[in-house]
Image (cartoon, rainbow over all chains, first blue to last red; front, side, top):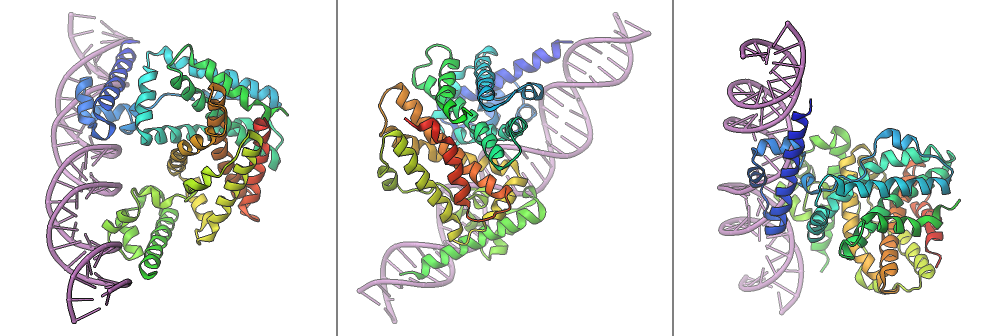
Length: 192
Length: 192
DNA sequence: CCCCAACATTGCACTGCCTGCAAGTTGCGT
DNA sequence: ACGCAACTTGCAGGCAGTGCAATGTTGGGG
């Protein structure tokens, strides 16, 4: 029951790896999907069975949080912020787990603003879900909805800035620490 | 000295208008650049003289702040946050000025997450500049840099959430009011 | 061990975005 | 009226991404 799945993971990793290598060695604009596929030992058509766009292969799988974890969040605001801190620092720590070469992702994105932009776009898609989950724990008035939106946006910002700080610091220690600090600095905004 | 410039603005508006119309009436995926151009009375090639991508024509020109305005910002943190509030509420108010049909932009983006993502990407590109400008007013240590990143990220979030609230409220009154409220709610995080 | 049904990979043809270039057109200053 | 610079346009072509149908592969039940 596992053989297929293992093979798919392996191919996916190979494609990610290939896209990072090529992107770093010759610049993102010069990367052809065909070459990426070739280096990973599959056809170009197969690349698009794994990733919807060329960019997607070069993005971090952050904010992959199942619905039930969002549903498990609890209010009110200060406690909620604490829960979000734990949830997303854990999400960031998980990144290194699947052998994703995070520093290389960060470096490629740093060199290529377009990729950074795309990554943010993907994050934003998650923000809709997050915002709804948070809003369900706050009063259903204008102020509550505004706070929910700000809280979810602040989560994305905290993770992103935390990762940047970790990168700027030469990837010392676990990234979770920097992310946690970022959440901590924003906490006063959600203290009540 | 003005004829050319006026004509360019007019063409640009026509293209924006056409892209909004077509996007709303038949769905973003079904919009062809060729048709947009035709409806605006120019060639498809000319479309790309005005916008780098099809999406760009459907995005709001937010965060267009010249370097000298960024350079004019003053610290320390609480005063800085106040200055940013003024700067970006003004930027949002300016939106309606050039006849940009903001509600239709918002509606098109609401219906099309991909566009929303792209818009966020563009915002993020500005964040680099903003972050540098802010960092110059804060201590140049790890904490200062972290705060600078969070502050600039928070600005983007505040503007975005403010605009969403304004949209959710049926575009009552000036959008600046909602954006200002959003900045206000985040202020406690930057009180020192 | 074998077969088969589900799944994965691939080639192919096609659409549409986007770009560089070179030729044409238009408006502006002198 | 002239010449220059800015703008527009058509054309050719590269490349991303998609639907489809054919082919290969795998794991499980008999």
